[in-house]
Image (spheres, rainbow, N blue to C red):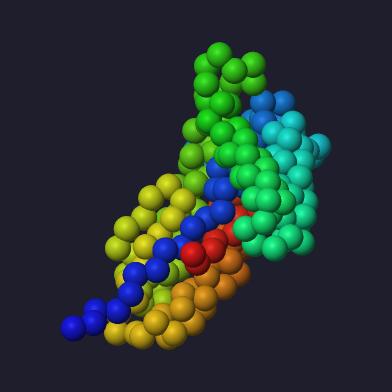
Length: 193
């Protein structure tokens, strides 16, 4: 008997994107800032914080490596080299959040770490409620992903449904960011793997 499939939806580089969205950086932190994390910590909208500048540079460089990689045949030496390089950039980007919560890091700020995790939690909760409001069950969720049961569908229908859920979620993040974070621009994006 076939019970249908489980699909996994992943928020791409969630913590770095959360940091960029609320402009979380030691020098933008301000009790009167316009951008607010769900835990109450606020950040100024302008200028771009050091964190946002660093992460957007890494993003840009990573995209360049990916584009370069894709000009070569899959599996060729060049493809493998640029793929490794883009992966290193991804790791650096994702560890930036971790190091900002390390007490001996020069830009350490405990409140920033908890602000970022509070954004992450809020967006996962939002993601889960959008999925459930469409009548599906989230059977497992962690920091940056949701597993969704899609019962009674064959493979093609499952993939089609997963893409629908993916685009509904991506369309919902703009409202979420304005409502919950007071952010006009956001960097959140979820992907069905």
